[in-house]
Image (cartoon, rainbow, N blue to C red; front, top):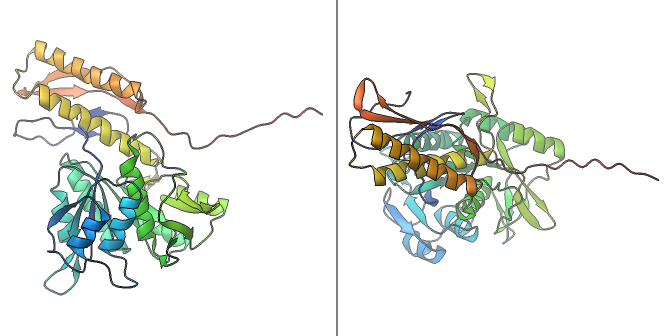
Length: 357
């Protein structure tokens, strides 16, 4: 068992690229950290509509894309609820995103986090935040965007982050109003689509992004290949409809070697559904149980039941043997081990035509 040993009674979990240990998913509420014209800094506010968001945080100044702009795009694209935090300043007068991220870190039901910054350093801080929250059984991803980046700069940006829990979107976009905006708002649109999707195994490829009607750069096939292989989720506009070409995480290497295990966005979204779902089921049913053979048999049956349900929904494609045992070094600990194969989205169809004349 490679997870941290805790003394507090509960159901704990860990995962790797091939196996997971017990776990239950939270709803895809979005966390947003952004500069606002009003509102108490670093205080989490539950927002359920754009109008409510304007009332709490005010409207952005002309030409500024802060909290108001983020909330508008999030709700346009399917977000049902946003836990929003106004970013304040530290004692040096510097915009303090770390404190805003820390406030969101404690929220149990946040599944996706966005911010209004295009800076790599801020995205690194957000990466640390979502990874720490996920390790503490509050699983989530971050969706971010840069500003005025070339294809090479976007892949360099993704390489600097290199996390299965961070999605980088690009290039910059044009809004329905005709105004040009950074890829930060493209990221917000993608986050809204993910939150409103419902099925973790369905790829976001081709999903229409509301509020966006153009991109700053028309990407050719080679550039799209470069972005996808480099850990960037590219946006393109065809026939007036803008959409992500393919949902990709920034995780492209491990230990300096190329690694595509976590490249597909659906992989981490499925893991974040499977593990928390099983963890919650076990916590609910076995909160006050004995670590006996009979209890362990019931735990195994519950895990199989949950996996079968997710298999029927095509969240997982298959799963392996479920093993439940008492930890030899501590008889109060029950180990649950199993493997599963995620249900992959359909990304490409190749046609070969044999023509007879």
